Length: 197
Image 1 (cartoon, rainbow, N blue to C red):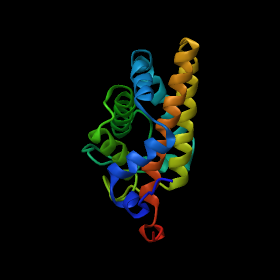
Image 2 (image 1 turned 180 degrees about the vertical axis):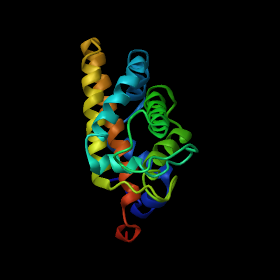
Image 3 (image 1 turned 180 degrees about the horizontal axis):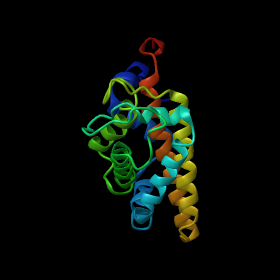
Image 4 (image 1 turned 30 degrees about the vertical axis):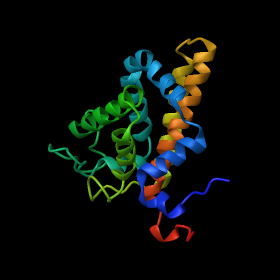
């Protein structure tokens, strides 16, 4: 039985990532499957981004998090929820971020810089990074990840890939999104709840 330093999982991102990929079984073949889908998925990213924002704008509990100024955005901010449309400059700014994230998933090497990036994706939705005004509840992050997972699955199933490639691609993205989900939820965890061993 392999020993895992549970305290170190909370303090050492590289150690945590190594544990995640080993336990989940995310390896080089998964990365190749994800990168192999880049050519087919990249042109579909704008549609995926629009679908995500259509969903987020369908609920006040998710839309309200786009009213405060977003980190890195310098333009005018909406005055309230009712005045915020998907055409707003700040939403266009956010859509570009999501588009770059999806492209990064299928093009970037899964090295230390990528691990840091995936971790920042989780942290930036809390007051711990980015905008101090932004504090997206965990339930909203979970429903978003579930929606993105299903949208990606549906998109992959409609690429007409050869069955072995389709299976490999679906499994690889499923593993990756569970890893991403952990690197989101860890920023919502109370540091005092870590096991003592």
